[in-house]
Amino acid sequence: MRALLRRLFPPQSARPAQPPSRSEQGILRAVDAAPHNLLWPIADQPLSGTRLSTGEQEALIVVRSRVLSEACPTGLIGRAPVVIPRLMAMLRQDDSSSARMAELVTQDSVLSAAVLRISQSPLYRFRHQVNDLQTAIAVIGMQGLRAAIAAVILKPIFQERPWGLMGEASERLWVHGELQATLAGAGAIKLGADRLDAYLAGLLHNLGWSTVLRSLDLARAPLSPPFSEGFAHALLRARTRMFGRLMMAWDLTPGLARLGEELMSYAPDAVQGPLIAALRDADASATRTLFPLVETAPV
Image (cartoon, rainbow, N blue to C red; front, side):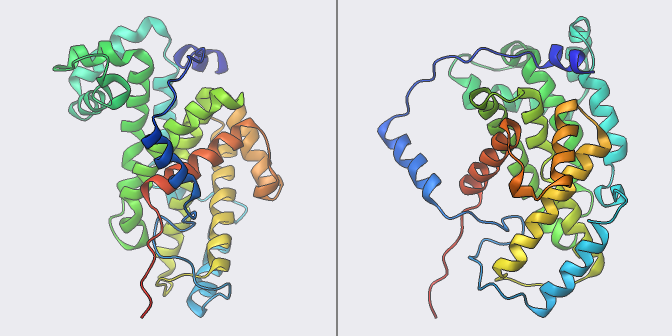
């Protein structure tokens, strides 16, 4: 499996990056200095105190019983048990099937739109003028095409239940995951992690949030912001642990399975290494960029 995946996501030599302008440096410093929004899927307000409310206590009982049980609650992730194998089957196709993959793009309107969107992103737009699908496929190459396929296949997982906390957070989870995957893949090169492992980890990381939020929806726990710090950190531990459980269960790559085992065996903050470092950095950067905290004015 590893050899096949590496043919799809071959290692790339890092090219010298252009230094950011002064204005860009200022934006980056402001983003890095911003407080981290721990509960960005469901709130933008700062946390309030450390003591859990009655509703938060009830919610954590549900999360611990459902998400942290012995069995992997794949039912909380909708179509994932069907979608993930389909994704891996697409990613395992070797280079000889690239013409077939390009043909698939022209037959799928959703995939065609994803390819066009990627080709018109800042990463490619300054190099080429993209006006049609054939040009877009040529511009992004097989690496970009495979990323588009992975994104299209995974996106419906985050959009199946348009109600409750998960319904409110679904769009945020996906937008954050796309940026997180891109940042993790880029960060992996600098940190010495496997780029494919980092990209897939970033794309799948928010499924941990999905299981937590769907558990809360099923329990109908009475919750409303502002949330406490204790509640936020408890949900974060549950999210990370659930992500680890899923990576172990699905065994997508040896690196992700190993990361999942470590996250399940040790306290999440105690797990170290290039892959988890790339994922943590990408998570924090994506959150600060997309969902910064909103300071409320004093009454």
